Length: 309
Image: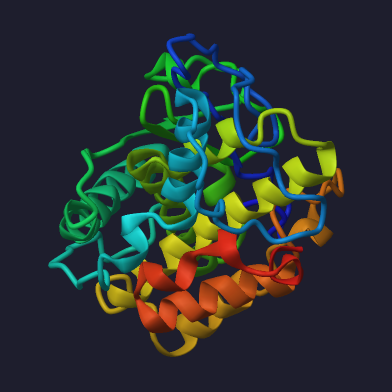
């Protein structure tokens, strides 16, 4: 997670813009979600304004303009928002906090499987293909078990690589803080956030929104990035809220989680780039989704600008 109050790197998203109108895009690795290929699209909203659905087209449209309208509709009115609550699933995670690379990876694989099983019936109602993401532990500067996690951003503790459908995390950042429970809650939150990016990719939110804003101004692109990142945290919190008991997010551990999500934001990022959202808004989206357990609480793309600042 980017900007969480601890001495770690920043969780980021590595975005790969998919094929657009038959043109292959290339992978771009950055510390923000940036498109690599421009596409014909409707004009993006002005900086600071909240995106809204494209108005109905009354005149005859060209194929490219129809594509743009469909793409924006997929983001603003995605079926996932109305697919219902995330269910609780049977999930048996290790009882003790992981303290090694092997233990963290084992925990991550169990949790990813739990998230997949919880989200699968919800995504099925959205009528899209959904699979389990791969999860890989890496060490900065060293080769990992997957090329998807090699040569990634150096200022991050985790990221999602959509072209390989892989969650990469730097395992050393989640052990050794002196508080194993704090590390574990942080690890759970990070995995749920990165799985949120996997959801965005699976249902078409990620690629379509970025394609539609490929030529936007820097200010608009940053706002778009905040909408994406806050939504990923929101999706993650919906799962955690529905499955709080197997992950022991009750009592003082829940208070610890709440403290973390309300102290995660761009204010704490070393580079001060406003691409993930303020601590206030990160807390807002995370807490509401934890309580509702419903992706309907996570449509950041129709929220006013102040809610994604």
